[in-house]
Image (cartoon, rainbow, N blue to C red; front, side, top):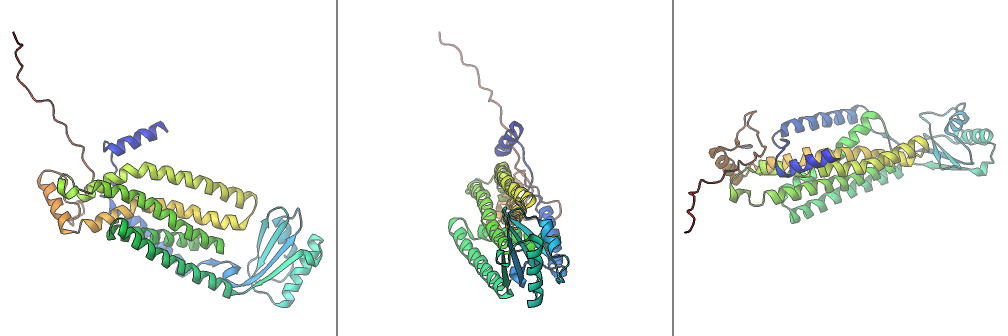
Length: 356
C-alpha cells in the first residue's frame, strides 16, 4: 500500500509517467481485437438466451433440503428436448427450467418431480413462459439504453464539451459491446438479471470516465495560452494523476461483486445472483480499461485535430519540446509524456560588502 501510494504521488507530480495517450494506437488495437471477437461470437454462436427470452417451462419444487443433483436426476428419464437448467433458490426451493414442452411432456415432468421429492402436486409451481415476454423486456431495455445515451450526451455537452461527450459515449458503447461479446463467446445465459447488469455497468463506466475527464479539463484549461505542452501531453498527465484512483475504485467495486459471484453462484447456487454479478464483474473490468485507455486517447485524438491545438503542437516542437502528437502521421510521432521541467540553479549574485 505504501509503494502504491508512493507511485500515485510520483504519477501525480509528473516524476513518473506512463505514456498512455502516446500509445493510443496500441490500446485501439487491443479493443479492436476484442470487438472483432465479439462480432464473430455474436454472428457465429449468438447469445444463449434464457427461457424468459425464447420461451419455455419452469417448475419450482417447494421443499426443504433439495439439491441440484436431485433435481437433475428426477427429470433425467423424462423426454425433454433441449437443455435443462436446475437452480437452488434459498433453502426450500428448487427451480427446474426447460424449453417449450407439450401438455403431455409438462404432465410427465410434474409427475416425475412429485415422485422424486415425495411432495404433492400442489407443492410444485408450474409456469409456462412465452417468448413475447422476453421480447417485451428486450424492447424496453433497448429503449432505456437509447434514452440513457441521449440524456448523457446532452448532460456531458453542457458540463464539459461535445468532444468529451462523444468520447464518453464511445467508451460506454465499447464496454457494453465487449461485455455482450464475452457472453456470446463463453456461452453464458442471458436472463433479465443479465440485462439489469448490462444497464448497471453503463453508470459505472460513465462515472469513471467523467472523473478522468474532469482532471483532463483542469489540466488543459489554459494549455493553449501557456504554450509549454501539447494537449495530449497535458491530457496524459491528467490520466496518470487519476490512474491509481481508478484502479483503487475498480478493485473496491470488483471485490464485493466477486464475493457475490462466488458465494451466490458457487456456494448457494442462486442463478439470479450469478447472472447479475457476472455481468457486473465483466462490465466493471472492461469499464475501468476504457476509462483510462480508450476515452482519454480518443478525446486527445479529436482535440489534436483542431487548428489551435495543431498550432500549439508546432510551437512546442519548435521550442525543443516533444514532437507534435497529432500533426505528424508517422508511426513514431506520438511522444506524449510530459517532461519534467529542469530547475535552474541560483543566480550568481555579487557579494555585498558589509556595512561599516
